[in-house]
Length: 630
Image (cartoon, rainbow, N blue to C red; front, side):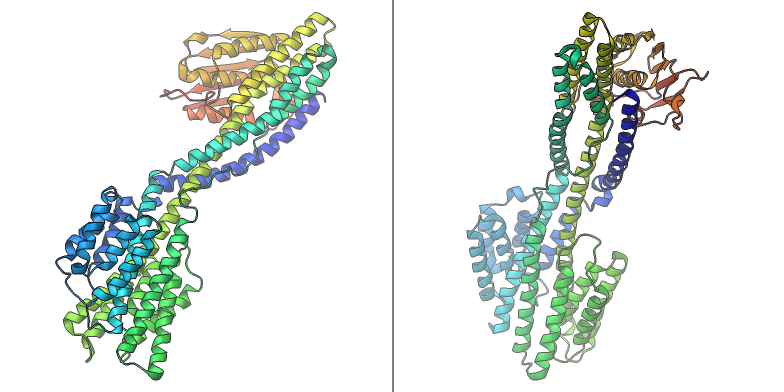
C-alpha cells in the first residue's frame, strides 16, 4: 500500500469516524439533558420534600375510621412511626422503637403502624409472620359493635396501613439513596468502558505494534511489511471507537420498584373491595341492589388499581379518558344512590385524578370532588350530620393522598433511576470521546513516524543507516505501546520539551529543518500538555500532508503555540476544508483548546505557501488538565 492509497483509506475511515462521532454526540446530547435533570430541579423534589409526602400519609392514617380526633396514645405512636420511617431518623429505629409501639398499640387504635414497623425492623422471614399476627389483632382491636364489618374493617385497615407505610418508607429510602449515589453508576460504567477499551485497543493496535517490533528485528527484509502494518494501524487510530453501550447495571433499583409496588397496590385495593362488600352486607343490602352496588364498587376500585400501577413519569394509562370518566361517573352516581357503598368511593376517583391529570387541573378537581362529598352528605336526609360529614371528608382526603403518594413516590424513584442511567450514558460517551482523542493524538504521530522510518530503511542502500532507522522504528513502537496501555487508565503525560526533540529527530530524518522560536521552559504547566499534544499532531500532519516541505517552524509563547511549514499542506491537495476545520485531528485539538478557554486556527499561510496551525489560550487557565492536554 503506497502513501496515497493509505491517505484515501484514512479519509474513508475518518468519514466513518465522523458518523460515529455524530452518534456519540446524539447520545451525549440526550444524556446532557439527564445531567441537568439529575443536578437541577427537574430531577424531582429534594429528599426532604419527598419525606413530607410520607409524613402527610402517616398523619392521615393516625385518624381512626369514623373517629374525628385520635386517642391520646396515638400521639406517641405517631411520633415513633415518623422516627421509624424517615430517612433522616431511620438510624434510630430498632428494637426499642418496636417495643414501645407494641406497648402502645392496644390503646392507640393504630395496629397498622405496628405492622409497618414490624416489616421495617424485624429480619426476614419472621417479619411477615409477625405482620400477619398484627393484622389479625387489628380486627380484635377495631372499634365498633364487633360485627363482621367492623372486624373486617379493622383487619383491612391494619393490612392497608401497614403495607402502604412500609412501601412508602422503602420508596423514600430508595429515592434518597439513589439521589445521594447518582454518580456511582456512572463511575462503574466508566470503569467498564475503560476495561473494554483496553481489551479492544490491545487486541487491535497492541498486536500491530508487537508485529512492528518483530519486523524491525528482521532487518531490511521486513521493512516493507513493517510499513504496511504501520499504515494500517494509522488508519485504525484515526477512526472513532464503536458506539455501543458499556456494561453496567443499576444494582440498587433494577426491579425493586415494580416488585415492591405492584403487590401492595393489588393487596390494598383488594382489601378496600372486601371491606366495601362487607359494609353492604352489614347494612342489609340484598338482591339486585347488592349485585349492582358490588359491581360498581369492584369497577371503581379496579379502575383505581389500574390507574395506580407503576409507570414511568409522564406515561399515562391507556384509554385514560374512558377509564377515568367511567370511574368518576360510577363514584358520583353511587354517592347519590340510596343505601349505596360508602361515599369514600369518590376518594378513589380523586386519587385517580391526582395520578393521571396535570397538577394545575388535578388539585382543583380533587378539591371540587371533596367539596361535593361534603355537600351531598349534608343535604341528604339520611346523611351523617355535620360531625359525620367531617369524618367522611377526612377519610376521602386521606385515601386520595395515600394512593397519590404511593404513585408519586414510585414515579420519582423511576425518574431518579432513569437520571442515573442517563448520567452513566453521558459519562461513558465522554470517556469514549476522551479515549478516541487520546488514541488519535497519542498514537497517530508515533505510527506515522514508524511508517516513515520503515520507508527510509527500505530505500536506504546503506545497511548501517537502514538498521538505525529500523532501531528507531522499534523504539517508537515501544513508546506507542506504552502510550496505548496508558490511555484506558489515567492517560499519559506529555511534555513540550520532549515533543520538540521528537519533532527535530523525526522531521530531520525526512530532510525537514525544524526551527524553534521562544523559550519552551517558560510555558506554564497548564498550557504545556495542550501545546505538546498540538505539536505532536502538527508534526504528524507535516509527515502525512506536507510533501515538499523544507522547514517547519515552532513558535512558543506563554500562551501561544504556532507551527508552520512550507509544504503544500492538506488545503493545497484539493481539500474543501476551510481554515480551522478539519478531520478528527483538528476537531480533537479544538475540543482540547476550548476546554482550557483557548482557540485553535488552522489553514494556509498568508502568502499561500505552506500551512499554519496556531493555538492561543485566551483566558487564564485555572487548573492543569488531568490527561494529555485535555
